[in-house]
Image (tube, rainbow, N blue to C red; front, side, top):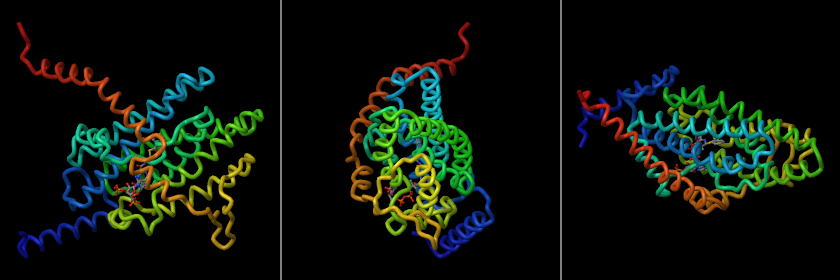
Length: 320
Ligand code: BYC
């Protein structure tokens, strides 16, 4: 049990830690940090890493069906970038203690969460445009905040690189949506159908309403998040609605309206039952996504074993 002297020392460390955050300093690996801060970061960064590598799957399914070589090359590059984002993020999380193997086991055993959005199917080519435009657009808003403000150095720096690449991803998706929305009647129909299916799940990406978000107060207190789930969601809606109207695309929300006094587009109620079901493993594609990750992990086993054997051999003294 901690005596009064230990408690005073802990309080002094906590006060100094919070003062560093208030001064805008970054916390670096090895610095003193409260255990809850470390655990919150492991939770958030590992979920983010899992989202990147699971997020490769719905788009990866369309690489062989891209309509031309240019689109195929762009999509390949995007999916490869996402693998890279997973790399930066697993490395950032490893600085806090867990190994990559432990984090991957949590994902493959179904214990870890990853973004709700990747549990929906990509039914048509238009979905690839909408993922870039909506999903990467939502991700950029959230990750720009984390890049600028997250108090943990390795996570903030990983997000700087991720955002640079996400901005290219978003632009290629937006360009596809503009081309399809202003193309043939069939292209317009496909893109409208994709908007209808992806609108609500994208809004859920920002997380539950602030009053139902248990983690936000602690994350804001320690400078990991600087804007709440509802604030970011509102900014996203305000940016996107006029753009969709300009493309003559309908938004599947009969309650959507503009509020003069706040200058906000106000959305109808999100189906939170759907959100909670999806993030607890019961969405349209959860089983399929985890099965694909497990298969990839098994199929890559020989590569990991070969690399480990090679590293062992390199340690041996040179044979004459
Ligand atoms: N999906 O207290 P709350 C990408 C969970 S990848 C699933 O508000 P917090 C991309 C939450 O974890 C984008 N679960 O949480 C990749 C918590 O459960 P636990 C991924 C969600 O942390 C490939 C519970 O609900 N981005 O862009 O304050 C291709 C209560 O939530 C979700 C990141 O991961 C969700 N959407 O806020 C293309 C960014 N929302 O853990 C694109 C980093 C909430 O207590 N993460 N939950 O059991 C964050 O910014 C925050 O963690 C969140 C949630 C805003 C997501």
